[in-house]
Image 1 (cartoon, rainbow, N blue to C red):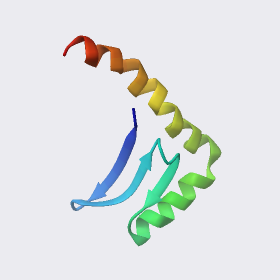
Image 2 (image 1 turned 135 degrees about the vertical axis):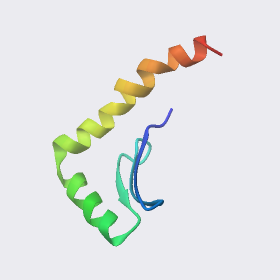
Image 3 (image 1 turned 60 degrees about the vertical axis):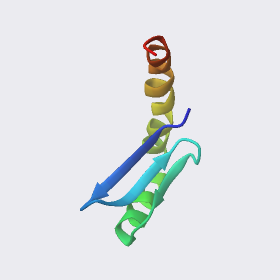
Image 4 (image 1 turned 135 degrees about the horizontal axis):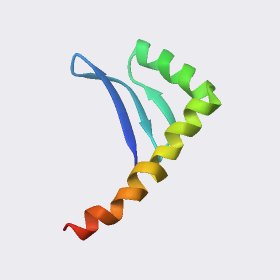
Length: 67
């Protein structure tokens, strides 16, 4: 299971968090600045990492039961 949080502007993805990478990655100049800022904030980064357990793992059983 992988948690992905992407940020877009004008249909262009500029920043993404992936739980398999464990950090934010920027794809544009603006996105790189955001990623550096968010990766250097330990509380923000740990909150993003916790989303996998709080959202994905919590809801996976519901998805499997409805299939």
